[in-house]
Image 1 (cartoon, one colour):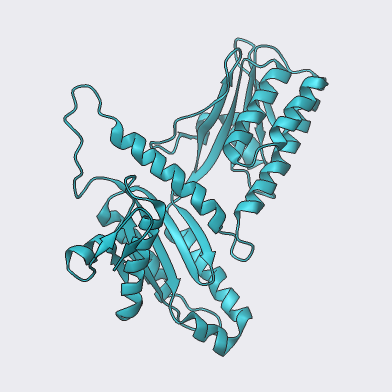
Image 2 (tube, helix red, strand yellow; image 1 turned 120 degrees about the horizontal axis):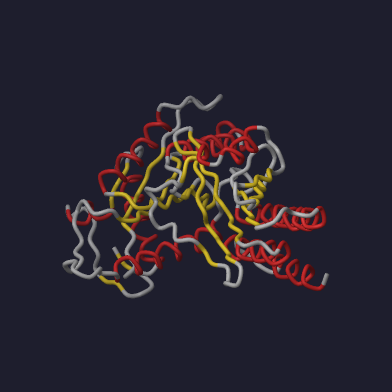
Length: 347
């Protein structure tokens, strides 16, 4: 009982999903005496569900996160795990399957309403007792509830998108990943150089054009509906690995992961066109302006965001309904930097 309470205190003491994942698999592995436990992500890519590990613990070893830096690899098709696929399709709370060697695997989807994008996998050399199943069920319930609370604290209440507070953490992680990737040169590789077609990370700032006119003419209820529909278009236009945030008011920010300049342009332009062609109830047509910039680990977050804002300002002051790339504006002489330091840059 003391061990169970210790794990409960540990799980509820964290304020981010990563440490919560580590805590839950550590708890179920120890209390179930499992040989291995994993937290899995269930991701839908082009209509197909894939399974990808994000945290793992093996008996006798500390729990750790799984390296998921290869964003082009969605994981294994769920069809490779028939028992889990059936469990998800039937909306069941779990599935217990034994292999030919008598080893048992327990699948426990974390249902939030009618959707499960996380699953626990617990592997045991012997069958699970009813007491073990009962304890694991309690841990999973606490995990699900606390995951819900973390999700709620990270989301904008109107649109359901990630909020400004979460953006700071996500950008920091992206910058840290960029530093790690740029610093690695494998044996026999030439020195790494930046090329125009090399994959990078990108930050885009989106602003709804003439949004004040929408509120003034149609009222704030229709204004809020426009923001909700813009959020839906953002979610559907960008990829699963990208992150979309509402900054407040009519401003949104997107972090695009691992793509080239040409692809970033196409993805952002596709979103702009989707908004321009959408019929908004009562309001009619609405457009957006976008400024975007590549993310460099050598620059402070405030500078990166400032560059994207400058590109956005150029789009807003040159006709709106445009997508502008900061570096292209700079190289074309349309923007000029006159002085800079670690915290501010003047134009």
